[in-house]
Length: 309
Image 1 (spheres, rainbow, N blue to C red):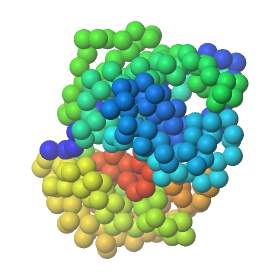
Image 2: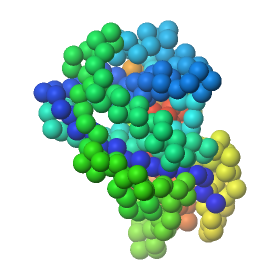
Image 3: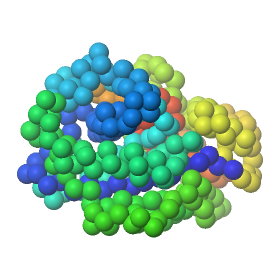
Image 4: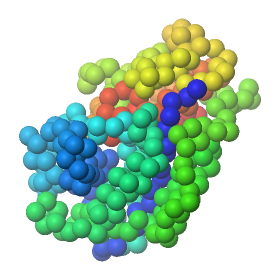
């Protein structure tokens, strides 16, 4: 069975003349919500959240958003398995504009009750709380409404929050994300292009920009192992095993590479496109899952996801 996961698509509507993300957006969202959660939970439950925030302290903690002088991203993540994936866009938004991001809760954290009782209250508090001790006057926090929240159910999105109204009867399960999800593109499609839509770092080395198709699949296999679901890497009835897919990918060369480094203040090292001689259809399900779960370093900040064409 594929790993447990609940995918929430969150739509925030700006209610100020102009706001800016002062850090890489997923990092800023993680830092703010993580801090609010740590301050809101009872002492015993808050301890791992405070420990997770230790990585931010040498940089100034949440006040880093006001300082705006981050040079290198910290190796930081929540104490639960979660991915914050901001849809590619801009850093500044005007009044009435929407900011979209996904929160993916995985493994033991794939619990709808946890989202309703811990994550959503933190997001609500962040939407209306103004704290000048760490907030610059043009930041997002305290200046948005939670317009909508959707939950992935196979290839569709179910509505959880509509026009700021929560559907208390809706219960999300940790396996609905893959119900009816077709990972097989069919024999008529030919794939060869991979476009990284977030920065990636598969080799923990800023000087090696080129990941082979084998590297991508090995990183996915490692990701599934970390999520304690290494058997067939999350596929119920794979046409070939993940090890066979890795062997097959070993013989597929890269024919074009257009990667460039991201800013040093961002997580990951590289972004851009790669073209392969061909991407066999039998390994496509593994690549689709890799794009959903993210691979490599800094997955908590949404790094390591891509589109295939």
